[in-house]
Image (cartoon, rainbow, N blue to C red; front, side):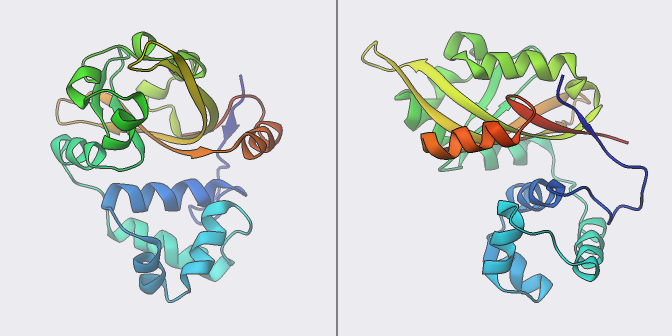
Length: 218
């Protein structure tokens, strides 16, 4: 199973590529645009974009500034806020529980499927999608994702589903996923993704040790 453990090193010494997931997660959970994060860090939006795309890692000094920002701005939002935020996303996003039920679907996900959010929420991942996404759910379960053994996951997936016309449809998606403990103490799968073309999908798959690349918690 592809697994990339974290080094037992100071927090600012993340492995190459981990900064992109950390920064994207930080922005998503706070609904912050790249320009706003760039202003907080005193860099250009283009630089933040390069970090998040994995082109370069932040310099050692900037890594420390980013970690200071993360430590002083701890997420404390209740699950309902996360649900609302995920549901309002124009992109692909969802909140999924340990049983595989989609508790919250974003506007973008509903638009992709050609269904209302209420038609998707409460459905099992395997009843909405076939192929990579149900497979990813199974892999996350076996990797201990819902037991906080995993910090973050990046994936390259083919979303396959039946559209409102009864036709099989699909698209390529670059996904970023992380666990979040809700008010009830249970871990949810915070799914987010962006559509990509076939060429980018194939490039990501070649760069990953399989369908996904995960970072285990310390």
